[in-house]
Amino acid sequence: MNIYVLVKRTFDTEEKLVISGGKIQEDGAEFIINPYDEYAIEEAINVRDEHGGEVIVITMGGEDAEKQLRTALAMGADKAVLINTEDDVEEMDQFTSAYILAEYLKDKEADLILAGNVAIDGGSGQVGPRVADLLDINYVTTITSLKIEGEKVTIVRDIEGDAEELETSLPLLVTAQQGLNEPRYPSLPGIMKAKKKPLEELELDDLDIDEDDVEAKTETIEIYLPPAKAAGRILEGDISNQVTELVSLLKNEAKVI
Amino acid sequence: MSKKVLVLGETREGSLRNVSFEAIAAAKKISGGGEVVSVLIGDSVGEFGAELVNYGADRVITVEHPHLKSYTSDGYGQAMMAVIDQEQPEALVFGHTAVGKDLSPKIASKLQTGLISDVTDIEGEGDDAVYIRPIYSGKAFEKVKNKGGIDFITIRPNNIAPLEREERSGDVSSLSVDITNLRTIIQNVVRKSAEGVDLSEAKVIIAGGRGVKSADGFAPLQELADLLGGAVGASRGACDADYVDYSLQIGQTGKVVTPDLYIAAGISGAIQHLAGMSNSKVIVAINKDPEANIFKVADYGIVGDLFEVIPMLTEEFKKVM
Image 1 (cartoon, rainbow over the protein chains, first blue to last red):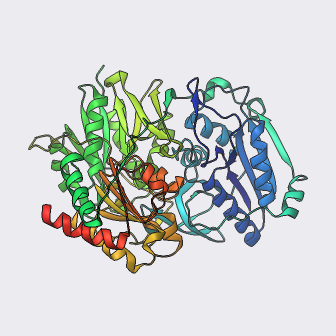
Image 2: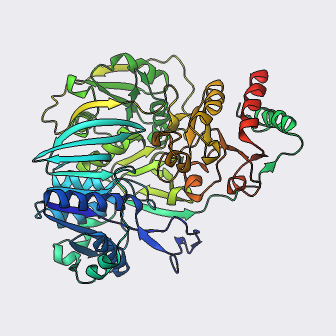
Image 3: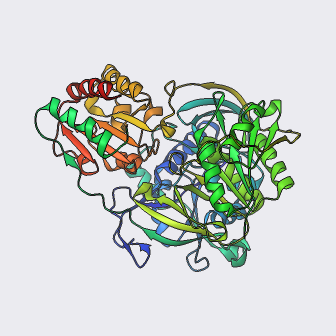
């Protein structure tokens, strides 16, 4: 089976955000594989181990993203592809990303493409379904279970807390939700092996993409931090008085009741 | 220039979702005085048309077909594209819901447009509309505008106020669409979320963490939620410990919520949890540990045992309601 995983390098959740010059400061910050993409990588490896084939992880961005690709290889992916957009694309949006990924994937005869259901930085959740639409294959988002028998695919997906059971077929793109699996940590032998696994680097030229074709459709005009919240009030006195005071505050001051 | 805006209306368990009314209010702003047309898709949805008009839609178009009983991206995609072909809108507004999140990228791809997802506020009107959306799990915000072509946004539930409901009149028409070649067959939906109030649209949320200590420990939280017409949520810790189902998890993984009132009981306030609730309008923290991180984002805090405080709160609320 030809299995592809779309991976994004993201800012670590634990990092404090600093904005300067209208951009999020990235210097010195830790970067990780988007946590939802880790579920996608793990699932891809499991599918390959059960059905055979090859897992190829793809990302876009600069050379820094090699680190996340090596991590995916260390987890067990077979090959990695970095589409280096650093020099060619100044402003990207989800249209841009999906277009480039789909151009790469269009002649690959992918049976299964996996991605995270959302990236924790941009948080749009668009790229997976957009890629599927461009490739004219079916997609299922926020999946928590995946079973493949021949061409038949049985899926459970999370719909706002409820579990939807459905049937579809390959070729297919799915996006992973928490609960799909428990992503493995790369083992030491895995990390050693990953160093020798193939990592291909491509540029837009290699994909015959013209910069104008991928011009973003939307534009970010400002990034800002939410206003700092004034320190809250810790109530005092005996508990029953605190409770009475709290209810009164919620009713009369905050007016939320 | 005024715009014609198409809005996706959504139903859930036999009634319209609030986000449908919020989307109409958003569309009014974007339209800059143009027409707002609400779209309802399903196997039998005509009865809901009039209510969308009461909330401000100028017109309603329904697409009904047996194959549209359950949402599939193929079925809804065909229905929506047929309406778009007929109406030629200049903007689209969907809810950032399970359906909206799944369907909107497909429609944006087919129209070759941008899509601004998870919008929480709109500045300006008509052609000058600028969309505000949280990024980095709510730790920052960005202002985004469309560079041309169709403005297409999804709005986060509970953030844009709906218009006042009034008896209004407007045309409700149906469009017949042939729905074919569905690649997904829905077998079954297992309800795991609690009965009643939907967590993502709840005005009041009572959330419990590891401090709740057991599944039974959530009973007093549920009682308070029921009294306030709210929903119960949980931290990842409480879900990992099996006290409640993951469907209740609030946080970076899990649901992002913005209720009017969020009461965090026995939740320490890990950064991942804060990512899911820190934009709530009023936050109350109840925790035994005065150093708990949750107090840093709380508007009001009580340092104490939740098993003592929550039942007392319930009694106190009963007195004033």
